[in-house]
Image (cartoon, rainbow, N blue to C red; front, side):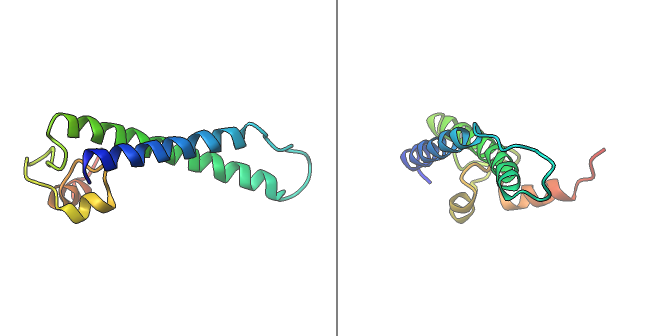
Length: 108
C-alpha cells in the first residue's frame, strides 16, 4: 500500500473513530434491567473504539515509515514484506517469517 493510500485509509479510520466517539457520549442507563441491548451495544462500541484507535496508531507509524522510505521493510530481518501481507495488514512491521518466529517465542 502506497503512502497516499495509507493516508487515505488513516483519514477514513479517523472519521470512523470520531463518529463512534460521538455515539459513545450517550451512555445508556445501567439500571436494574437484565441484558439491556443498549448497554450491550454501547460496550461493544467501546471495545471497537479501542481496536480502531490501536489500528490508527499502527497506520500513523506506517505513514511515518513510508515518509522515511522504510515502509514494507521488516523491522526484524530487514527483508521486504510481501505486498499481499501489506494489503491485508498495512500497519505490519514484520514479514511472515519473523511474525511466525515471534509467535513461537515464549514470553515471560
